[in-house]
Amino acid sequence: MDSDEGLIALLLIKRRRRRRRNRKYWIHPILTNVHKCNEHFDNPLKLPKKFFKHFRLSIGTFWELHALLYAGLKHHDTNMRKSIAPAERLAITLRYLGTGCSFEDFELSYHRGASTTRKRVQETCQLIWNYLKAVYIPEPTKTCGMKLPADFFKIQIFLIV
Image (cartoon, rainbow, N blue to C red):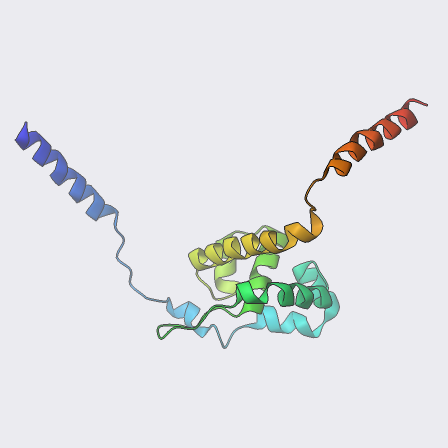
């Protein structure tokens, strides 16, 4: 039995080693021109109609949302790499939510890796939810609970008559 268990353990180790992917780059050379090629955020800022078409909200609303979420969007730079700017992080998230494109599509447009973009969009969506749920979805109260059936009954009577 010991030799069978040892053989199984050896096969599992070999299988795990096979699954590991050796990375060729820390950052892919195509994605290293991040600071040179940031046109997807800078260009629409100059034209309000293009900005609205691109991000599905006005420039003023974008900066208002940015100011509200800035503390959560801001991350510190490290010795290894610079963090994504809060405005760009919000822009990527809004563009993703507005278009529904895959993260691989954003890889070349925003010069960020697909997995990086995926993580940042998830973080930003969670941040948006945490900040805005209290403002736009109030805590239900007893009066709200009483009001809903009354409103429903009024609509029901209107439809019957």
